[in-house]
Image (tube, rainbow, N blue to C red; front, side, top):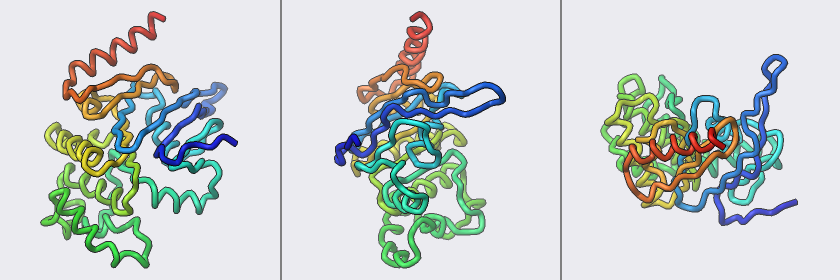
Length: 254
């Protein structure tokens, strides 16, 4: 069995995933490979149907792949039972969705505490307070999601993803339901988490002005790796958009 370096937080090795659609076979992932270093912020771009959300769900262990490997901190996810995978995911991964997925009947603070095992909730009081302060949400801790703006709800969702101190944060279109100002604030927050805390972040998006915050961009098309784009620290959506379109055009010509 191939062993992977445990110092590499996340490795996707030749991942394959197919679905049946009537008589047709859809190749959602067709040999995708990707490696994420410690403290690296990577964006995955692609049009609808390119496989980017399927890739993120495979990274999260939310779906099984048909072949290949997803390896987190040296652990091949396919080797874990359902129960062990749930515990491993809780301890090693934070997941942020476009739709927030907050519980409407719970306060912001209680939503943050949801992933914490019952016996450890009191131990994390300081962590909860620190997260609320870091995200500018201390004054909103007792508000329920319905009383929060979209940007505030996403901040609480990010805090919930961070409560168990995961090394890896996966974000699926985290700004997709937000206005441009709130979206930029979330991107700035993710960038800071990578720079200041050394967290590895994988963010799925189709928007150049969101992808520009990453260190590099992996472009998918039809379930396959198409190109890798460097951002070089520039916050220039026009350059990202141009390079993205050039990658698509070069593939079409080829």
